[in-house]
Length: 288
Image 1 (cartoon, helix red, strand yellow):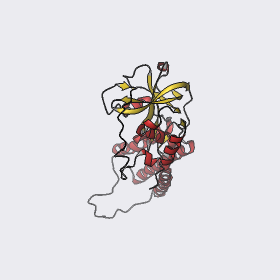
Image 2 (cartoon, helix red, strand yellow; image 1 turned 135 degrees about the vertical axis):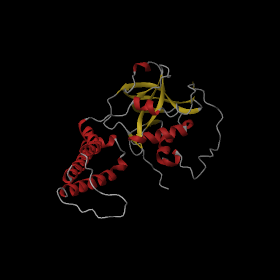
Image 3 (cartoon, one colour; image 1 turned 90 degrees about the vertical axis):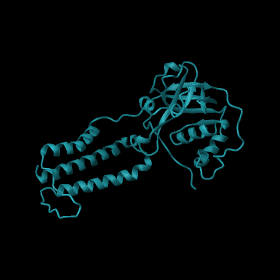
Image 4 (cartoon, rainbow, N blue to C red; image 1 turned 120 degrees about the horizontal axis):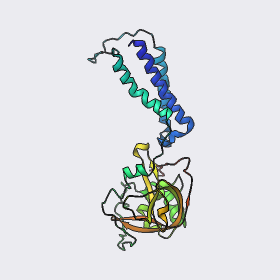
């Protein structure tokens, strides 16, 4: 394979990758892969790849002089056509498949692989709605200034949730609200809650119990985890996994696998369409 062929293929790969990123940006599907706070890096990457592709393209056909740089190996192009094509295919195939195939939104199957976070911490599947009366007056973790607890991370949201009689989960406060409920559930018992998400259940769940949640993204889909709340009530078996629902109910607290967790006793459940932005993203109010 001639050097100009190598240069041309490398330019094609770089331009193809740039076009793939541009396609995701124009369609808005980039939000299915990364969190919004990572967008500046994506724009920077797009510019760099485009510049490198242009340099590689205009270099095509020009003779290159390889000087001894002292790195103890040569810089010659591979001479085997088969070896070269296999190497370039490792870059070309992912770009082509990304351009041709539709994006897939993570749902219950991905949640089952990752596991509902409290399922992973214990093999006991017991669920008790009796709350332990033993509550310490001073939380050593909360009083430690070096630990960034949900209450410290979301001070404004904590105050809003504490003062309001109805807790409304939105895309902006979804992760913060669930984190606060898990850490300070005793303050929210009896309050009304409205939230939406997809239905997810473990294999050992009874028919009257589901989890309604959404995948939360901190950086990219690789670190995504399900943020959800247990729902227990009648006629829940009719809602299949991955069905998107809006739940309105009353918050209670349960002891589940040794964890005191929020539980919704539903008043109303309605099926809804999958949101345009199915994921929720981690944000911080903490300012120091």
